Figure 1 (cartoon, helix red, strand yellow):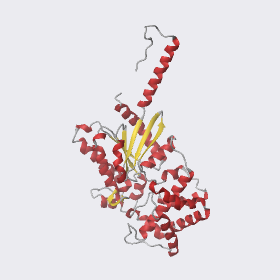
Figure 2: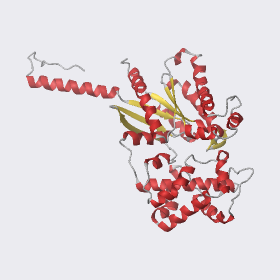
Figure 3: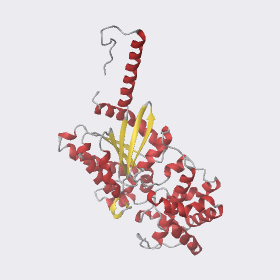
Figure 4: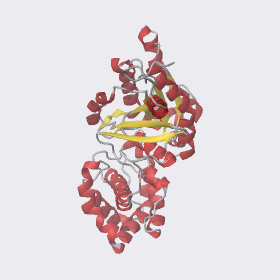
Length: 394
């Protein structure tokens, strides 16, 4: 927009008018600069890959404008996560929808009452926000009644100390169990003693299934970043296409440790293979053809734990027969990365239309604040450059 220093009759404006004009010009330039520095990121990936965890971590790190602690809400979420996780273990031991074969039984029969109590309490509950009303009804007494909460904590402690429950936990890849189970089982007594004054680590590790589309913003080194998070479960994916416009870059989050796990919504489909299939669909999507992708190979902490076990390489080969690496983290992460790179290379070799699309990769651990801070610091300049390129000013 041009700003003129003469009026319609050709007479010079007074000094005050010229000063106002200069101030307006500066404001317009500042506004244009602000728009140029606005980075819109679309977080995609299969369910339980860690997208929402990354957003919560960034909100804590950068103090985003919509992040705050809700004491009652987060306390109920912690209690729900604990109850649902122990309920999943109890159901697997009792021969539920994903029974353990061979079966696992309690080492201490007196813990059966605790097991039945947890199964009844958690029946019908899940990590989905749609179950919020049921969770409040079941768990609010634990929040307000110290005796009921103590009974709950004692039941969890007794079961978590039972060797049979521990054995079932070690076989959690055979049924659905959230990654935060052990963390909150170990932490529950401390939270009880602290009257549930939880830490940032507790909030980050909470499991809340994303439903619908949510947006978060944060500032980093003078630049505004907007993150759009869309649920990764199958029923949520039709909403993805609504977010494919005005995107600076896609952050694709994949669970590296999901190579031996199945989808929560389909216990016949492998999580990592599902992520690879979705990644291919995203990479070739015509609406995102010129949008670069930052790949977060997430849950490196969980992958490391799995690869430390005896025969880990053989187990990876069981689900991915093409794996010929060793029983260590480095071999596993290189193999998993190559699966995504092969998809990129296949399309790059077929068509010139992908020549402006770039794949950037990071190994991430969403629950590690320092890791996420370093990764986004390393990505910041790339994202700003991509934003400027999309606005055709480079």
